Image (cartoon, rainbow over all chains, first blue to last red):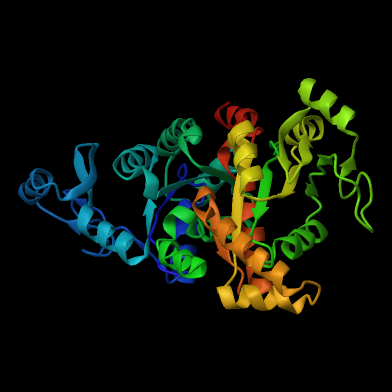
Length: 205
Length: 205
């Protein structure tokens, strides 16, 4: 059955498991690919152009904005980020799904740009103590950074009610199964199954 | 997590598998129970009062209508049918789901009465030849009845686009898995998880 793709948004506060769940989904499901944003910020160690981000100059970014090449774009801490429109629209037409690992503001803008195609899932930690434990377990940040991350996490959590689905990531395998269930159900939505018009016409003779 | 129940509608043309799928769902899932309609028509052989239907007199039915006791009601071939409101509202409050094995008109009326709580699933046969084969395989109906059923099936199919989800019942186990997936995902919808308000308040301290 021919269908239209969907834009699958996973958001969570840092430490609640969004990146792990995204990696698991991309590995398990050949029907979904990660949206690669364009950004003017320089690559960090290990980041690959075209895979983690499309790294572009400020001039190229401005051209893309004025050319209408972005589905949504924003400036965060002085760096610019945008979602290239063409690969997303091609995926939707071809019945492929696109994963967005983005924060609540990105989710909101994407929703404004493509409401009927967007499915928004928010991942919560089981408790604030567990979230802090996970951030500390990384062992990479000092106390000031951890406190700033916790503050940002609380702010992110406050936007839970802008999402279509909310999951509590208590145990990652169970939470991942719920993510897969949501994606499977959304693919069965009547409005995405573009092949139904011809199929039902055939049934009715 | 506290949640609000949902009203799960399965519709299909006769022979496409709605009743089999309903029985499978009720057997497999303790969280959902079948809505029992009230009707003025007399019981058929084997039908149990309070289980298949609440069999009521025309006078009692009229009292229930004027008392606002029905969520929706309709007259079909001179017999009256109604969905009692109280058990449905109790189920929604208590986080239990209710299954409705009804036709497109019932689905439409239920949707008008309780839009945000209703999830509508339509089951299609894989082909019109297979539908006819299934109706004939029952061996209970003569040619005139089968032709009338096929005509009614085509009319029912024409309402496929009033549903939230549409499934093709090619293989019953696969179709049943899709029904379960849809129900599981709908239970995770943010708007149904009434416990999230307190839970996220706790997270944000």
